[in-house]
Length: 301
Length: 301
Image (cartoon, rainbow over all chains, first blue to last red; front, side, top):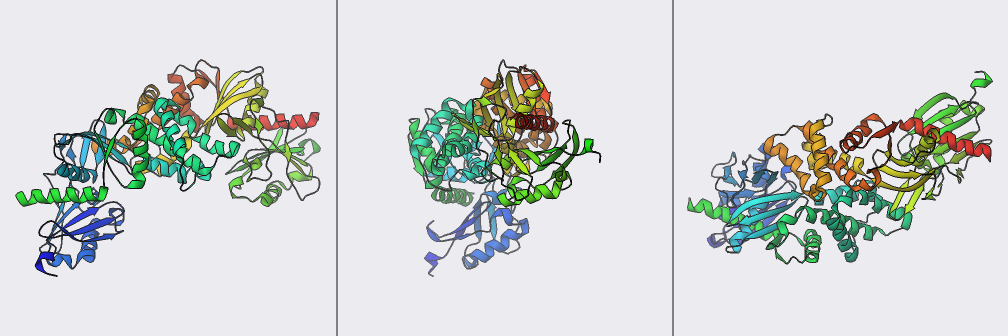
């Protein structure tokens, strides 16, 4: 490895379930990438350093700085990086340094963002947003980050103005896999018309939702409705409820969506049906771009 | 045991999780009652008879008829008792006989009720309703049967006209015990004002529900809101959604509630706040009264 190809610093996306590390060279190029399932959820605070060193021992010969985002900075993580409070800039001006045993290693942890009224929190998504803004000059609008806990974030003048979390992804998984509906909902499969009809139903009559969930089970018992159709209908009912709830965020707004294909698709279809045109960006790329923006802040200090 | 005190027949409430048997004497009096955790959920079809015989061997010396309600009559139960289709009378005119090995034993299974549009099903609740109507002459109105899957049933002229199931109880358990909210929701405790405020919020703005669930977790992280308050708020948000969904059932109606105290209390409080006066009845008593009504039908045939 020539000096041009020696890692200069390490970017880390350390979430609840997974860890992703990038070796970054002198010119900001990605030299290598590694992943691990040693997420924050299974690590005691004093276990993080060993996981990092195990996964990136050779990189650490030349890279002595790590910049990390995600649940690694939660109260149960390596070190608590106290939330910034919205409205606030997306670039973190108060990174926290994690305690380490190893000489010549500094680990900077990017703080999450909280909102006081209504209460809300994010940790990790702020970095993706920073990455998106780093690549799109003067962008104002609403960023949707779909996932287990989907975030809707109003961004203006480089600041997070306000945001709202919907736990639709987690609700779908609980209902489809743990509830009585599990007997009637397929593991995969789709029916776009059924999905869009259900989205439209909950958006126009959100007060009916509570009475429509058990109907999925009953439709199978009474009408033998197939399980793929019911999967699409459950998704549509819940996404419709989310779009009804977040209407003040997306209606008439400039909307960008940062997420992987599978989790993004229902949101894109639901928003398109509402006439909302959505710009797209890749979640992993935006995370790396956001960590690079945070690293650049360190350099200028 | 004198002949006056010998069981004449056996009433059985055989649900997914539990079995309850009553020994009934000549005059309809309850001579004894026994329970078991051998519910339908854990039994193959050919295992039911042995469970019955084990639990009631001495009763079977003189009682050769069993009348049973509940999931024992489902497709996965002892024998499938096909649903009656609403609108229909609450007293079952088509009980099904379960296959047995023992001579001189007849087991009659009460059918559930289904509805085709919107699709819905009940199995067990129809017997409680029959019991309630057996005790209240010419009663018309709406019966609410709270539970894991709460039923709202419009009853008129001795018939089930229509009904709606809400899986609010199961949803509450999933969110409070399995979701990310579990870190912030107490196992018990209550705050009536918080509950009623949340009921009112979802009833007046049902479209906001999807955005209010994660806020419970965030309220604890941001404001250190106590877990008992958050438990009451989660219950209120979900009961409010159910009352919004079932408003066509209870608004301006004669409402009766059949259920145990713990599961009934939030419904009673929520309905009282809407100015709805509710008559109450005990679920176990109504089940027995309904099985007795079904047994009386056998006698008249």
